[in-house]
Length: 170
Image (cartoon, rainbow, N blue to C red; front, side, top):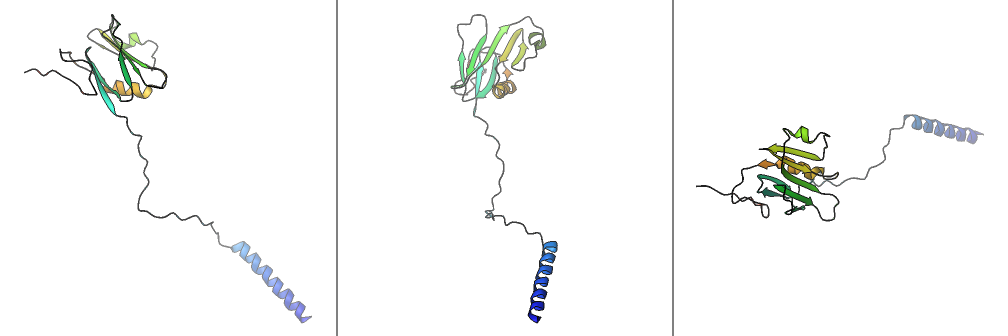
């Protein structure tokens, strides 16, 4: 009988100890795999900006554009000072740049629909337009932000390989 009492006492002690452990047990976190310290920090790298070339047109304007784009002059157009078609191989859509005489007094008269894919400028009675399609927003923005007017000279024309050619007067 003494053995039974001892066995019950041990069993009761284990149950009490188990209950205390469950109630007061420390919060154990699962072990996370250790990462080796290399001394390097991870930084988000900004998206690489594409190489830009410069187009200088004899109609008196210049702009920058990504090097992966192709510019074709529509020379058969007899009513525009400039008619450029900008495309990219394997990509749908295009951007068209035109320079034509205008009677509009401001760009708002021309772009009455406030089309976000149409940008215009009026300089000396000529309307310069950049018109693109959905999906070409980034390229249109690059062209628009870099757009500049200049006074044409005999030596001005489309830039070759991104080099701007200007005539220097003595």
